[in-house]
Length: 321
Image: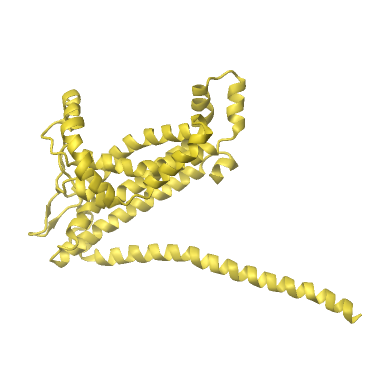
């Protein structure tokens, strides 16, 4: 009888120990996940505290004024918001078509022996530091743009106000191009995963109806994954908004709103990187903190939208992607 009781109690003790271990593991994972949110809240709180003086002085008008004069303590964030969105828009216009085309080729068109080497190259491009891209742009990209591409754009598109004015090499368009190169691996990787999640039944059904390879890609693949691709583009936009070093090195850092894309400009991230160590007054420092808070808010909103768009794909398989 005692042997039977001992044999029954042993599994019960093991089950209680297993439940305790599972509970501890769950709490540790929960603490790790919450620590990320706590860190984000602490960063936002520090930026808010640092920008309190500027908020009190300028209020919401800070976001719509274009004057930037640290000597007279007149500050407006509009030129930097403008430069941030323009460079990001240029980067998306260049990077998204290239990224989607590359993802389609890697998913449906490339031979099997070539896919993994190309994927490895794309992943390595994503790991190149920002300052390296900036140095490459200064010594290689800008000289070529100044004597090659930009004169051609001015010749053929000079009737548009965006492509008029003197060509310096550095400027808003150059910053947009270098950001496009930097976000291309990210958008390509996410788009590739989204396209891989499209069920093969979609492709087989289209082929069975007599569709060509291009029609299968357009109708069965891209139409199915369009929301996920849009989410990948928004993720790339979130990266473009906060890009700092490479943009600082090539944009020209001029705190004015220019009509021409060839003209120098500035972004939220670049002005913070340029002037934070040189701020010699409490108001100037507080204004830079407020610019950081604006940039953080924009980045959070963009990433939230991207997550919703990626999860909005209709089938369970693509949601898991």
